[in-house]
Image 1 (cartoon, each protein chain N blue to C red):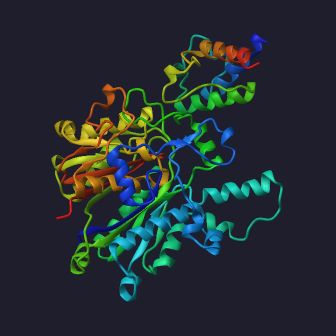
Image 2: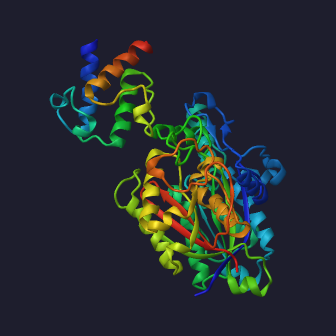
Image 3: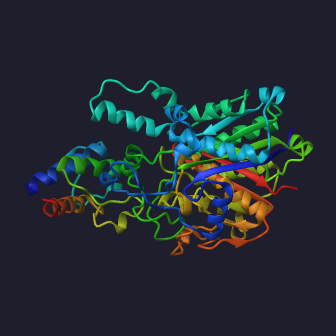
Length: 403
Length: 87
């Protein structure tokens, strides 16, 4: 089995248009959530979100590209450019033939669906733009990354709601670890802050109208975000041989299914995914210093997740740190695990733990060290990243500090 | 009108609970009737549609909501209150 190094990272989200901007915001505990600026926002009862600010598609893409790229594809491409640029890889020959891209997204081209439903239903037109299908399909982002960077190996998209990114990165990890691919580009992207996207979430009545306050007793729901994060997962020896900088090492992955409820989470399923990741990484729970929580800020998730952590880590649960950065960038749904992996890299590489902001009142059912409101300096050897999706599908990654 | 509101709310809850309306009595809680969190959210949606009202309800903090769901009678009263308020 090969070891798997992360040699590049890129992102665009409500906290910044790059990894350095995003990590700076996380260090400062800055909130990227605010009033959203989208069409028909006045008809929404939830009017906040973690929207990407100051976004100008014309500066990144030409007219033909914009005609073909939904916003979720644009976000994915921008993140991939930063990640692959940092890794310094050029895909040709055998490397190109064996390297690929696996990306998570829950909704795919939601803006394209929304805009074109308006055209045919609201405006009553009987003709739509010819590129509607290639724009909205869930694999569009993965395909455009493969085209821009000449990636000709295993490439596909993964869609498991809020765990999409973690499932995608788990697949990439396994492809590199098995030796099937020397390099995999992976992560996730979501652009669901559209009228229809927010309206759909309103229906479930789990959204907050004011803030995302994970683990806080007065939390009142989740807040949607948007954006992407993309990473370069590379065979460790391949990275070392070319003198690449290693941001962190991916050491384990596990996925489980609750097989119980379409929306309510299960502590057992979450616990099995965390212990599975530890087992896959062949490490003891006591080595874990930080967990990037799924931490949605809903009543149900946060207490279930804390119960699962207590169950898996026993006494060590009180010594490790667990924070939810969704309080800052919102819930990016299918892209969320990817943006959250950045917080794990920051913990391992920089020794800085991103805080859970908006934390106001302790909740006895979430009695762990949730790194409230302010970032903290700490040396961390191993970090976990949790994602627990609607549908009861759980995916947990384990990372280690680069040697 | 009052009688009518009660019957219509009870019919909505009965449908969610797979029960006859006669079995959905005012003192029963949703838990007694076997209506889970998804059933509750669906019932509230059906109430909003049936009466053309907006029900203030957040599934994260049902107890903090001004819409009392402690039992069937309370829900009926809350709907009547909203109808008066939003008339």
